[in-house]
Length: 217
Image 1 (tube, one colour):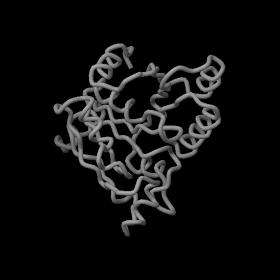
Image 2 (cartoon, one colour):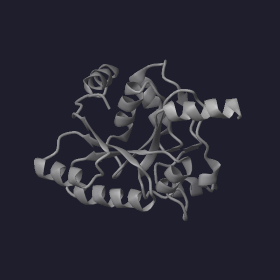
Image 3 (cartoon, one colour):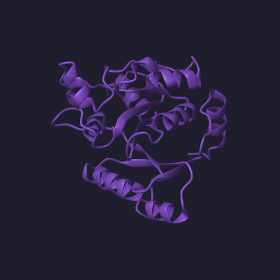
């Protein structure tokens, strides 16, 4: 028996590793990622930052959680605020899922994607393919807006087709009862639901307050 390999296998089973994605853009993935990072006392990694390099998602996590959080460097930092396949093409870069490898850490790890599941990272591959390559369960962020039910159910179908585990459904903000009921009826029984209240101002103090209010997940 290879004792070193067995210890590593046990360690990996004990670690919490999640890929945070959403049903679209601008629905609060980074805020939810910060809360999960705080809750699980985890490291944070944004594999692809596309645009907003002056105040990237990694910078936001650092501002909201403080300098003690471990933030792993992005694999790609692209200048144009657009879909990764477009912003990488602008810089003559071809992104491939085979180029990605999870950061080495003994800590829990929160990985935040770019946009939703079907955001292209090249003409042939999408964020959902990156999730499959990294072999991580998903936390899917949902926000209420006209069309969110459709976008949520399509995301659930895509995950199921790729045989990717949905570990958490994150309801970010308030939802009408009719909307929440339909969404929650269409997830698997083992999927846990996390409810994040609306945040008027995103600050370190508010992130900490909401994290403490979360039920055991």
